[in-house]
Image (cartoon, rainbow, N blue to C red; front, side, top):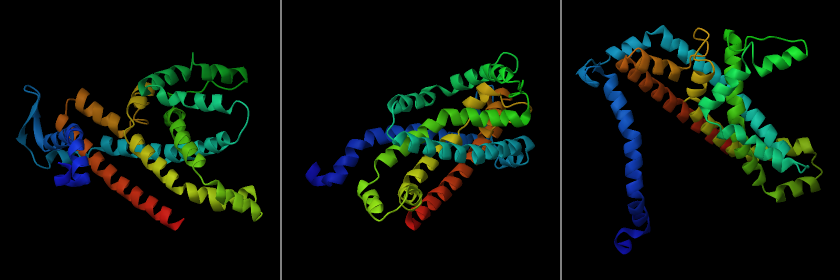
Length: 293
């Protein structure tokens, strides 16, 4: 078989069962969602019936709630992702320096990442409670507060971003630490020989070498952040009003509370297309930065 198919063909043959299973698990839900988005969904038989064409998409694109949820998601992404990247790489640089207790602190930093999102959201909802929360109690000890973390629209978005940053910054730290430890030591020895200082070394050597790592970490976090749902559901429930009603939470409410499965499927398809386009742009930008640096 190896002689007939060759080494690459034999490798693909062994991978085929797993690839077919993975393709079925990924592609079937996508195609079914697209099919439902062009259909009228019958709740009696729980299946799509009549073909309605672009009717669902027309309704979705004229839905102010959906547009507002896209805006909320955009604000969250624009603030949370750069914040997590900056904090993650800064912490990784600090943990890369040899000092006592570094290993213990590095292990502790990974704890938020392994906490389930719903659990994290529920814990932080209790911590930020205006009456009984530990955060407001601590602020009261120094004469501040109480602060309406969840009840105020602006602070609710700030709280959501902080919770997500608390949970996912360790992931960026993990990737950044691996990238920093993989940097070639010969380059730094040559820089020290030439008299380069710490800031010059950071700006001229470290950051350019870490551009591929930064790009990879940003794209991975982008793909995870677009799926924001569980933390928002557990921590703020999309409120107050619609201030933290991210798009996936709005789709969930439309499909499983209002039972408008056709509209929800159309929204999911639109979000998928937007995500694919923006992900492609991010890949192109990251490739450009890698080649330039």
